[in-house]
Image (cartoon, rainbow, N blue to C red; front, side, top):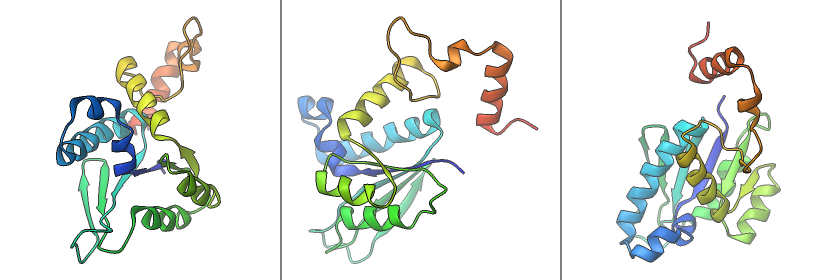
Length: 170
């Protein structure tokens, strides 16, 4: 079962340096974030759920739509993204890895209490940039002058692991 990454959509957009500099409208930011998270999900091999807060909207029901390997959730009126994320993280079985991406300190405390891992918005953007630059399917930090684990593995082991990751191995 793939690890689960739950993303607090507006929180991540608020910390997006490129969006802030360019002054993109909110709907464009949402679309770009979703596209980037689709790429990230493929590279990192995770299931991604992006949650957008509908607390002040007129939306009467929560909506969920699947776009590739990403599920996009728009909460309903009077439901915060934080409350949805807390419930979702708490409802995942303990054997499944769950990471929540948000820079909201209170939200981080809540999800840590469920056993989830927290990832700040800044850490998520850094990891996404790094994966994009490396074009590799792992999200580990790479320090100049040091070889990553995958670089130290023999070629036959790397190719077998890659086939396993893609589900192509017998």
